[in-house]
Image (cartoon, rainbow, N blue to C red; front, side):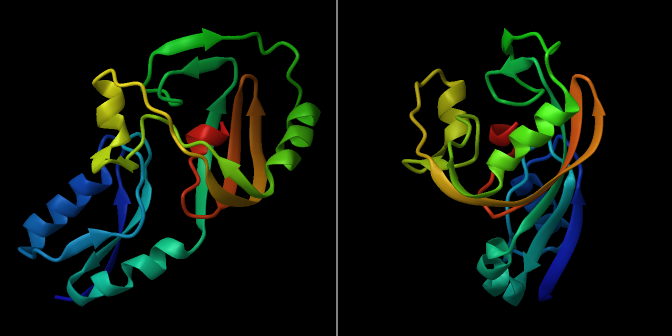
Length: 175
């Protein structure tokens, strides 16, 4: 069997979990994904099967679109709702007009520091495994492009945002 499946990945699963499940269901060894979604994220994950794996790198190069809920005033060690809260701040001074103005500074090409708790490989091992073992990691900033940021809802301190961006963009880091 050869081709590409668009799988709606549920929260709680890694992208590799989805690949393993598809391998098992289809009894096929040559299965891979085109892009990685965090375990806490849900959404479309392209799964390449058989000869379809040859186009995975091209699918990964295309832009991505996300719908994100960002809660202001809380910082976690993992940059997401799964982590431990390491800092809080007042959100009393936040306004929709201030957020709209600030978002303009995030548009276009830029460099972004990926989170320590990410699947980026450092010396062959995912950064999140090294971070969880207590190792102090220094992440390297990477070039990304954010092409669109649209506010869908503002219910302080929660912002719902539609994001169009390049591969390699971490929405957690943007938040």
